[in-house]
Image (tube, rainbow, N blue to C red; front, side, top):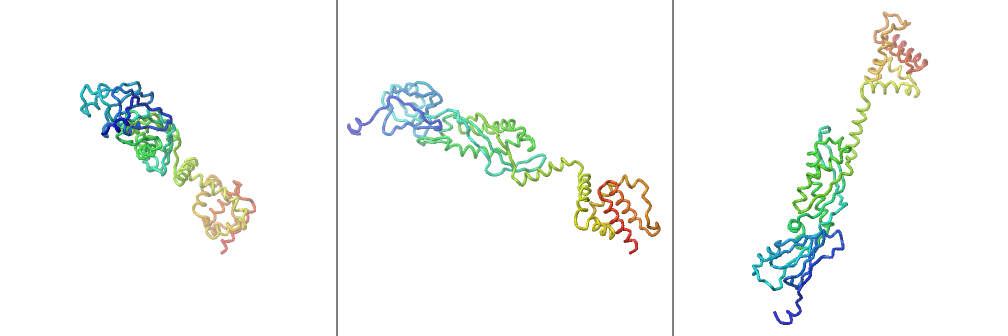
Length: 343
């Protein structure tokens, strides 16, 4: 190296990082052709860690404080360089600063539904989202696993990887919580703590400390939500047989208002009382008490009246007594039934 080149070379006496952007996680001190003066000062501010790297290998790590760079304070680098203990010459080494500030308000979420086993529904697909916070705890691991020798690295660069890490492991986290899906909404705090326990060792692999993990919302795909709503409605109905009977009985007055009224129904009854099995079951249950009373005398001779027609007339009378049909509908339908006896 010529004398001119030696003169142009500069020696660094002070190394520090005046961090302005909270979103920057790592920053490499610009060395270029400069060399660090033996005895130079290294300033590491609060919420920072400084790491010396020699040819891609992590050497010495410095916590916050003012440090004088000598062979005594750089033991690993001294060993890597094979320096003599009386070393007094400038040296070159990459210096990386890492921010240990808490990174708040980081969002996570499932872009697509994830499938989980559930003790109530067997299998469910759900979406979830929330927030988390983290900070660098092990700068050496973060350098080796994430940043490498990049000139800088921000939280915007690492967060996509962290979100994928969360989503890919959220299924096992929810499963290990043992909370049924229907109870998840009421236990989001418990679920968040369980997921934090699941994610903590995964973050630690990258030198990160997971500070908080919050579940803000859990939702189902629309088709599955409709199915659960239907199941909930069925549970609220109670006895489905009674509910069906009620629906059929309630529909009779509406049928009387339509064209033909119960006269049209009566024609069908005369031909076989064909109002369907549900209608028959509903009428039979609704008129059980009425059938226990003596049936009114019928104008049809007992010998000529089939037993089923007598039963139909009794059922029709019970509907009238309960106010489910009008007197006009009763008379019209009864006439059709009696008319069928002469056919």
